[in-house]
Image (tube, rainbow, N blue to C red; front, side):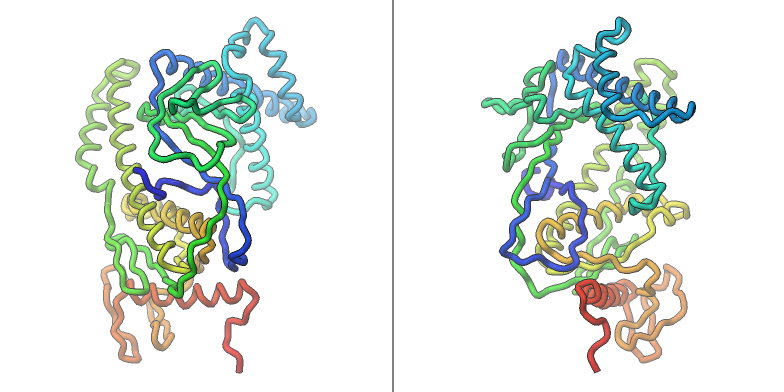
Length: 408
């Protein structure tokens, strides 16, 4: 892919009131590119992955031991000094074979995990509860290391990525980086692919203002129905790949544990799942970009995906990818100065008549049309989209300091 759709903003900010168009902010974006390390570079990356994991686990063990014995919390500076001393230890001298920045970033990740945990248990962090940091496993199919500017990584004149103690890696560039990256993360996913993820700062460029606003009702039979009448069919990528996934999983289950053939079969299963994930992400990027580009304000329902994941609709709910789609809408709205509002999940968008406002009884999923007492015949999803649009507008006015009810 060579378009803007593959770019995901790293900041997740809900913009309810627009800033003046004359102001320019800097936002951080993440650009991902496929890289192809040589066999020797793959060995060097494996060493770096392992060393970063050991440093992270050593720091976690030190802090957990201090907590268990009642000692004071081990500070970041103490962990950094312990890392320097460990490199001189005969049992840890191999830590010096990788870039020191990679090891320091592993400790930084540990500190971030603890800060998120403490903020979560003290209710300072919004969202789902964050658990205590856990030890990293060498059997984890996804491995990452991060290089910052201190590591002096560079993109060569020939378009290769130069990393300290690893070398120049081939990169498949789908576009140019808009500015100098502040860091790069090397990721090895479960299917054995390698990616370079650059963090770059770019100017916030608002899109031209429009007069259109849209409410979105998300569903399973139809992925989304917009209040303007547009219907987005559900792609059902997982359902389409079920036959191939089932055969790959059956082949994996027949292999002896610990054998080379089982490792090969596991890679095949991971590649099949990665293909489904890539298709879903690309599809969501394209549709979310189009919606944000065409509308000044976007309103969606705040669905409880975790709750649906505990029902018989779990597979369909996960296949739909609602959370990823709404997150993309939220991030792109923040970047392009659009309004994005989530409507309360308990708002009766389906049962309320968008004409007279009367709320009727609950309706099973098989009821796709219903008639209100006022005589209006409603399409279930389109009526919900109209109600989400009206509720979102009211929430937007209220958030910007206006009055929801009209003046007398």
